[in-house]
Length: 104
Image 1 (cartoon, one colour):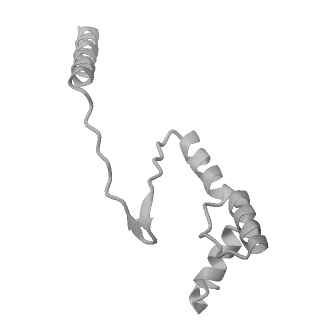
Image 2 (image 1 turned 30 degrees about the vertical axis):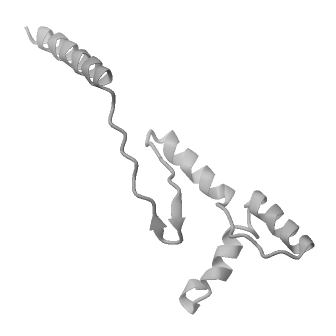
């Protein structure tokens, strides 16, 4: 309901700094005490709980940094080493051979 009324910043604050973003809450407190401008909030602890629950289902989660609001950094694709590819190919060939041996 808050988002529908254009209160996105209020909603973000409620979900982060006023919720369970302990690091962000400490940064805000220090900024208020020192009279500095507040930094943007971090991720709430509930997000990390969600990531752990998803990982417990056997799914892999990879968090990536962004270069600003709404703009994600280009993905870094890492090619496996040639030796690693050869090892995996040999292991798969061996497994296929074992499975074919079970048929007879």
